[in-house]
Length: 228
Image (tube, rainbow, N blue to C red; front, top):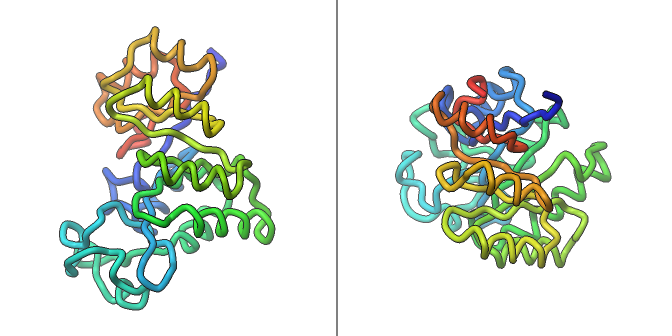
């Protein structure tokens, strides 16, 4: 079979090393991934930081909303007692075109700075648009990216209404639909692939992994990318 399924590390290699840290991203690279998925928020001083939650409580020794802290303040916090919250710039420098990066926009107002950084890395660091996918559950953020720079590849995330996601994807010329693996059948994958790449999240266990692989999806996002 010639169809290559991209191995995409979820928040780096979350199953091996604490999520969304430089160490987790390095682990994913060491495992030979084709792509890495990370999440971004805009902090109070204007930088994009790589972090999943809207609040600091679960992952760090800080508390409250991440968007209300400056980068300097965030850098003083410890993630799971030992790691640091990285910036998107740090992550891009570490990945250095070795694989695709899927940037999921989580926090509000993340679109503009994400576009600026992508442009910077394309113009100054030799990246190209194919190195990036920008995804989100939030249609407004993806619309903003599309209006700022319609060359950036977009992915529509959905965990509920697939029909709505596909309809929206058409409006922003998205390249991919990112789907919760429990929603998929072989027929659905084939239908979606008529117009889009199908990226599936978050598939960790071997039985569902085999099923999803048999559907010949375009990419699988996993905490354990080495299992794909």
